Image 1 (spheres, rainbow, N blue to C red):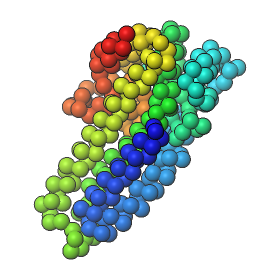
Image 2: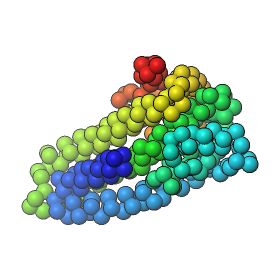
Image 3: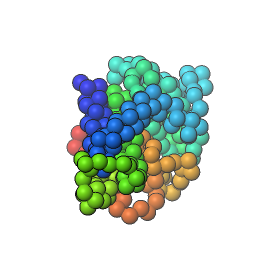
Length: 275
């Protein structure tokens, strides 16, 4: 069922992109958008995970190099009935973690040095359970495709006036309105999907460990430290993947509306309700 939901959302976002192409450039715009969407979805499905791991210079680890971490992940995968994901360490001081991969057999979990140094074993287990919940619900693929399509819509809007149209192309006022409205709408959809999935992963982690308080304390620590420690390699396209936003300490305008994560206070409150 979760896999079906994932593909349904991917299809919906792709159709939105194609429709937008048609609105600003008629039939030729739809064809261009369809070809672009097919290529982007293919790349996102098969290669986005390796690109993300490479971007953060994530180093693979195993039971010999990180026995404590491996034991935690192995125990939780047995509990969640999941295959063992590949494990990676990101040599960053900011405490954080993310999951990536297109399906159960191609999943990876990465944690930073800062996270392993800051959290207790119970809190680390809760964070890993959160990431495994993302894997369980195919959230990594959904987030990647949503971000890709949102970026593509923004790009298409910038070049919309240069697409050749025809008789089926809308008037210039409609085109200009769409060029402003659609990128913002696509971004809001992306952020809404991401925030909802974070709540779901938090709940999944609480059920997997049986201790919501472990994730509550872990999230509070991660949020506090992320505000004071920057992640130099972080970029907006991958921010949605982390358990806490790597840009938490930055002062962006309209931060809550366009944040990839719910506030830590909201997440802790929801976890409190599960006790």
